Image (tube, rainbow, N blue to C red):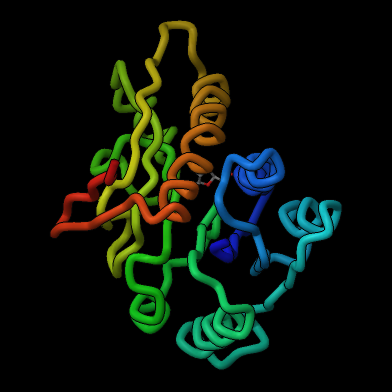
Length: 201
Ligand code: GRF
């Protein structure tokens, strides 16, 4: 069984979807740790309710980004984590963190990358006026939302949409896509060649 850590700063609905999928046996791994940089993050409460180890790690307790990331890396190593899943973790990881877990860190982003990376992917797509957007699960490299793409799902933009209704449908899509990608990793079905991530039969 692979050991998964989820890092989240906010509501944690993706975390919840991952925990539920794991409980249903749809992920060949267990969520062994949840870490947040926000004390009040709902993600921590969701983990607590399900009896999953959860830690608030306060960036202000460390000298800077590298020291903070180093502390998280040490915690992940102590908990023998195989996969780090970022789920609304609002910090750019330092090269130190990324190199400690090469192709073992995933992120979910609410657009069809490489379109609309960075903050507010849903708003960016909506205001650009695209007719199709969606979500992307990708491995994390040192760039901003630039790592190899694992899975994507398209979500059409309808005329009646507001940013909020579009966001809701993208969220629903994320909740299907992220557990699927994590399960593929746990079953060792993902192989990265250059920028391309293959799914092995
Ligand atoms: C999601 O929209 C995800 O794409 C982005 O952050 C949001 C997290 O939402 N990276 P939640 O905290 O899982 O509800």
